[in-house]
Length: 135
Picture 1 (tube, rainbow, N blue to C red):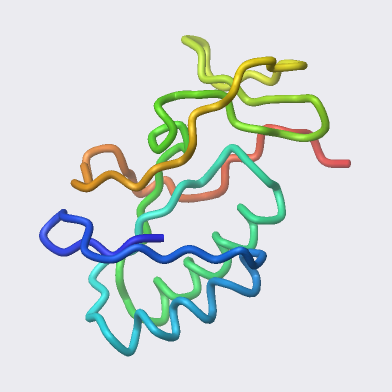
Picture 2: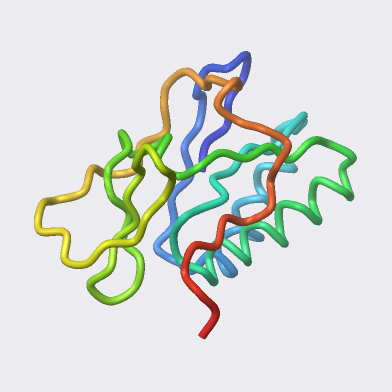
């Protein structure tokens, strides 16, 4: 997670905890230290539970604070590298959209917060991006 001021990254937050545990703790500090004007998040693809928890938490915060919640695909932050799905499956960004494939054998690029935030990559369509079918 990162804090941006005038589109420049000024603070990073990381946690080994699950999203449901980390988000409230990190935002407790953020809301005490910063005047948050907007929330930007990756809506997927990725862990179904993590995406759902993040969306509900951030959407609730967006409504409570009366600030926008904007979203983009996770591929924006990992150089369009495959993203781990479930088991041996991976999400790939292709011309026809996001597809699910088996057994990616290379190493995926890490997720990285950019030093400059390009707001044009985010949109108001912020509902989670669920690719995997319901179990």
